[in-house]
Length: 319
Image 1 (tube, rainbow, N blue to C red):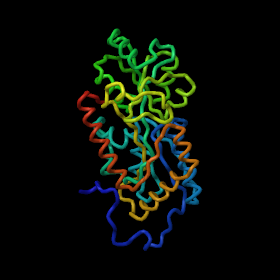
Image 2: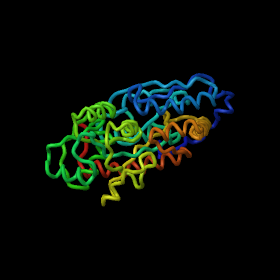
Image 3: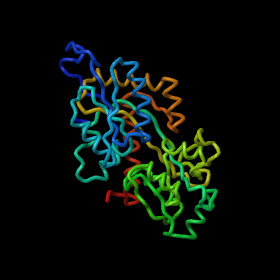
Image 4: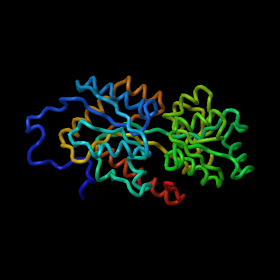
């Protein structure tokens, strides 16, 4: 089926045979979120290594808005020549196609999957002044005050909301959702005490946890997270299905020459193997991922299927 392969089919005349040299000019990496945010910071770790290895400028360009859709729209309108890429995450990789009616791109049709970058877990966190210090105390407090407590997320259709809904349904809790335009403003209001809790992505909230600005109660991972080893998993507390991850990886416009896709994938894996890059991502709460375009696409499809089931089960949709 057209658009579903991780790599494009070979054409009659290969890129190499045409005499072209790649790369011969700057490469753009689009980010569908604001400068200074989590994804923006992480892509710059990788861009620096790519630039050093490939010998051309690698420029990060922020196209924030609409849950990443503005950046994704710019990507699919760009030439499929390898000079415009995007760091994509759950929203643009698979969530938005199920949540927005008039989306002008479809990931499996319009993206060329190049390679995964990383995976980050989520943690249920509260303001340090909130009167609960354990997950059990938080659950008891929610049950004693149904519909009276708020939780924040990065948006109506955000990964933070989906992770939180998994938790709420697992324990039969009722909280009011407060959607923000991004994870950072949501965390800031949590730290101010304007909301009581959120399911924070560790790649964005780890510094706040380490500094004591927010208190973690449990992680939505299959195993304890090395960066916060004293925090239990939900599975340890009887909710084995409260597991959620944020997946990130690089994509380009569909139709890219196979030779360029292979070259970019090799350069990405090389950059991610750099100890400096790996260390920075690990400090940011990201588990590094590497592999082929096919492996990345397979991982995206698996996460897509699981997330679609969650969206339908809990009636999560754009507003």
